[in-house]
Amino acid sequence: MLGESERELVHTRQITCRAYRRKDGLYEVEATVADEKAQEMIFRSREPIRPGELIHHMTIAFLIDGDFTILDVEARMMAVPWPVCPEAAEGYRRLIGLHIGPGFGRQVRERVGGTQGCAHLTDLITQVGNTYTQASWPDRVARQIAIDPDPRRWPDARAVAFVGECLAWRRDGETLRGEYPELAGE
Image (cartoon, rainbow, N blue to C red):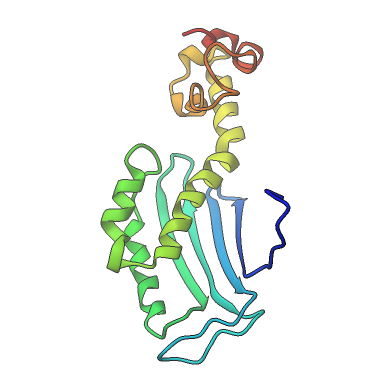
């Protein structure tokens, strides 16, 4: 892809995120990481990981309300390299009560960062926040439009928080003029 050189697959990381809206209006967001080795991985203190085996297979699931608040967390570790790894799972319950928004990443690192958690599960939490935002966006926008069709008067500005955060949604761009002309050029 990047060049003409021969290449050999040595590792595959798959990250899958799924969001579900429950009948009670809450959201469940699950993020899973699976690291598969395509070559033997030798260790000094344990048996090697063979090609085709998973060195990591873990899931972190969140229950989140419509206001970005984490109500419950469950971490599961189905494949890990070290016997001690699953001990980190229970610590992710310290995220209950956190609000997904500004400062969220810092709060996550304070509660489960470093040796308090698992680097792979903690990395997945960013994807959980992004997945929740994508999944809940249509509901949030519909609630705001029901209050007022003009996004400048929406009480929950998070519904358009992405404006100015990427090339497509720049303030002087065609996308914003087409979707939210009231916000264009502000």
